Length: 156
Image (cartoon, rainbow, N blue to C red; front, side, top):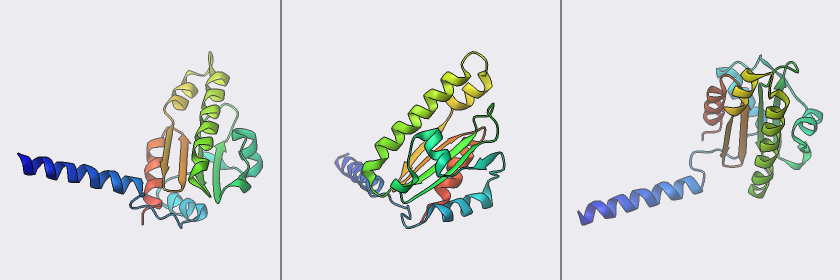
């Protein structure tokens, strides 16, 4: 029993250390490489590619503050499908990014409250993932697939 506890403790410790150092994440990939890899396995046609103005409009963020940004926005004002991938320069930027995404979620929920139950359901089922130097956010019918394609694209 004593050996079992030691082995279990070692496994927990190893898993904790590996998750802290971002095991399996290639932090050298550019967001363009990530986007290219993702587009090979997932269809991004239901969204339109955004730019730095869109990033400022939707998230109140400045693209020049980061190592790279990929933004896909809704194709119409009645759509909530969007995806944002940010490569941070410094991990201290992650919290403010997550705050910006929270603000976007709250804005979308307020905008569609009362007349857009389908949109609100999609917004409520968003995917947010931080891995290594990357932050991923998606609102979509296939948000889980988008997240998996993102994770696959940043593997070492």
